[in-house]
Length: 430
Image: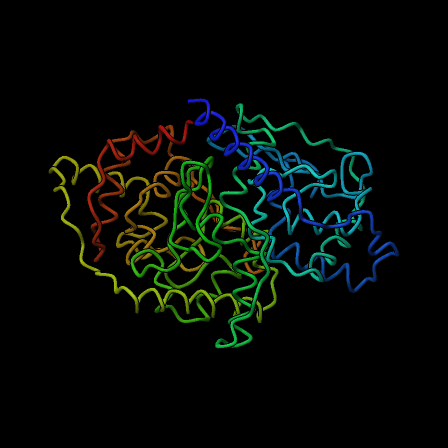
């Protein structure tokens, strides 16, 4: 028995030593003063562009506060995490950091003092960012006026907020990575892959998360519910959910640039991405992203063609059919049209809209409940909005009108029940 006990202790000690080595032996000398001289205007401008591409401002800006000054709260199943201050303030921001510290944060997920960063920061994606781009980003953040705003301490339940827990998580899910171009693909495809997998960290939203909060691979774009905000990021590989495989490239670029295309409008968290990030990207970078995403969607379709057949659905009662039509007429038709045709550049068409027919109704209930606006962009600085119906429509009304919309004008999607709506709204409240 003693031998078993000592063998078990030795095994646990060996695992602990491996976890420590795995997380802290990065061999990076942060005492080296890299980029000690003021950065050139061109480098700062490049860093500003890259910060746009990474949508850094959205996460690192609290509502109503200075840009990049941190403090935004992120709810997770394990507690709340607060984004850090990226301005040049010496006490609360990056003012005493050097480029090595910043590179270690992006590439290794460790702070200036060596602490392991909470994995809410997507360092599994930022690890792909090149050293040149990291230095440019750092130059931009150092150019920002200092804002004295201390980052609140994370409010994670024990033991999830401990360094030991972060270390175990990282050993399970994280390895510093380098982006390697695919020699069989075009430079445009590789540029798109770099932006989508690295700076854009698209899979951080567009993939499902497991019980420990880990998302899929860096190129997993198969869709998933975003924890904390309760929005569904649709699969970018699916014919039924986004159909990028068959969408003209100029329409994909248009959606990223303006938030609108012929058959799609962004809302919720993706609206924030367009408003703060992708609308400012160069057209060549948007085309590169579209090239990569469409290639992935076409590859997925070739590997496993999706059926477009509608799954058997519960038949709506006569009462539900009549109520859904009445709710639509009273609250929806004025903007979206009697035939769901919408109004160009104002209100999206509902007829033929994949977002309306998607299997996961989370986003539909979110929009009905809280309303929303399309992103404000350079082409549409004052977008039209949709009012919230949280005080107007019951769960039954929402279920009936959603069923009406999903089964009219050629749309073919399953019936929505009162229970389906209630389940989403319960998650919204939590």
